[in-house]
Length: 312
Image (cartoon, rainbow, N blue to C red; front, side, top):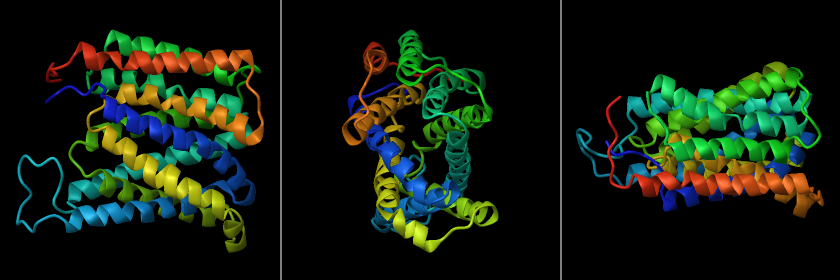
């Protein structure tokens, strides 16, 4: 099995996704002003599931009828039990992480939430080492350290204060890291659109059930948040997650986590251009460090070209 490090195409797809997610912070903040968190996520991922359903059906319909999938096929010719199981597992972990983050933001500052969530950058390589016995290159560890430093300067300019919301976001960081590792595991053997479609409907259904238990969903409120739901549903969910899932077929999970830290830079810049929130010198240093981390994370692809992974 060839080693997954990083590649220009995969990295570009992830960067595009982080740009969409970064701008989506403004949409999420505005949307949850009208709709409660669970309801917002239920509708958002329902829309995302519908978006992913199109390419998923196209993939299934263009396959030739065969009694059995080819033994060495990179993609399935039909929705197998293993694909459904993978989608459900990823969906449950994604649902846990996305809702923990929103509940955490209610009780803590956006700065704290942003920094704590970014800890997935260090959680991913540690879990990969402990569970999968997969060692990251020295340059990747350097990029992780630089990314954490960048997030510190970018997010915590006002100091760090621990409260109950931080605990929720810390658990979210583990869920987010788990989701990255799961997608890294499943994406090489399952079609990205099908996998994303299944997990999105899982998130939507579970969030709707929880919303009716803990919230009071109202149709009028959902329509009031329609522009924000559509942006996060169509772009942040449908388009961005499909791009990342496809990219993870050939990109190492730790490199993905580092690249995803660019989301915070975009969110900060979106605040500057859309909300007139000017950057401080400290935040500029944070942005610069994250850019450096992204560049360093690309080094293993050049250093280990043509190498093969040793069995765990």
